[in-house]
Length: 97
Image 1: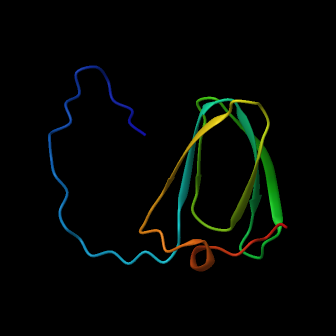
Image 2: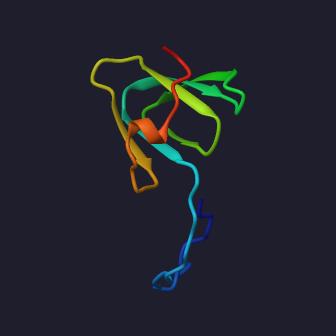
């Protein structure tokens, strides 16, 4: 999050090639329109929180588990994940059925 006063100049830059090893998928949701319910699980796959995420909200999930329910018709959610995507079978384990 940025928190600068008017006139602050952020210098143009590029990013260096840095080898990174990613072992887990991180997921960020931006709710463009509508509402969803998010169910958040800990590493032991136990439900720890249920929350409502609405228009303009951002939700970032770094560990544990999650599930979603759409609460309004026409809901639009932008989902961003780090990659590469290795397929559903390799990438996840279902908590709910």
